[in-house]
Length: 406
Image 1 (cartoon, one colour):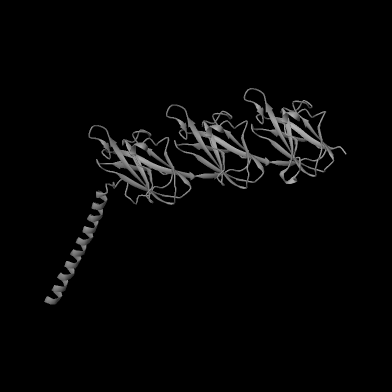
Image 2 (cartoon, one colour; image 1 turned 45 degrees about the vertical axis):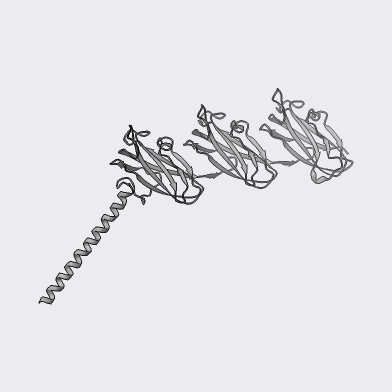
């Protein structure tokens, strides 16, 4: 009997000791959380946000901070919103701000002051690598002994995302929006050598009157070539698109930003809506003998090129129907340059090197005898009157054809 009683006492002691250990572990975890300054209501280091979902938070004491995490992917742009006393729906009481760091050590936002008015204009960044970011939220206290991490109150936080680079489809308007200061939107186009491209924008500068962004664009080729290096050089592109030809097949990136007026303004500092699209045409079009080729120049800086195969000693005539001379239906003041192609290896490659010498060609064509067999290129450009005008500076319609005379 005594032996059985001893075993019961020993089992009871083991049970009590185990409960004490569990209790100690629980207290240790809570103490560690408290020491980090993380709130039980608003955030622990494992508190992952769900995209597009508002998460409510509360500061219940001075010195409290809340932390949240987001899993991010390289090449994705993220937007962090806050509803608080600074900027929100007037239901929140905390003067809250946030800091953001990447798991790889990159500091994305180092100051609470830089990210506090984020209800209508979120804080935005593009992830430089895949991983996890940590968002630290704190509340501000006014007064001599105040500062960040010193106050209480309520707030809410959420995030959204979008691809850093979207693909454009030819001839299709892509509606888009810039919702945060510092945001740029990027688009990619697969381009083909010896093709001309046209980029259009519908915005506050030039458009249909419904867009709000003062947007401009930059364009770079994947091989490092800068096609347009200034937003201000490509901002009014609704009626007259930005045009260029590419020297190699590859991918171009278009970056769109919005302009803000004022002393503290500039590019990449504003928001608003816009739309963008692109079209293309071959850089060289082969003319058919005796057939009028109707065409148009739609952008300043655009030239249209045509190719003709010629035989040495044969005579050719080039006709133009345009504003200078024609049937009255065309609008472009068009002139031509005529040169042998580089692959023709002609001893005398220049046939007509001045647009002004080949512009009135409806009743009296430009006629020449080919000095050698090969391919010639005819370049058509439109003239603009005025102090800032000149060749290759205007738009309009015209038609061109050629004939063989012997």
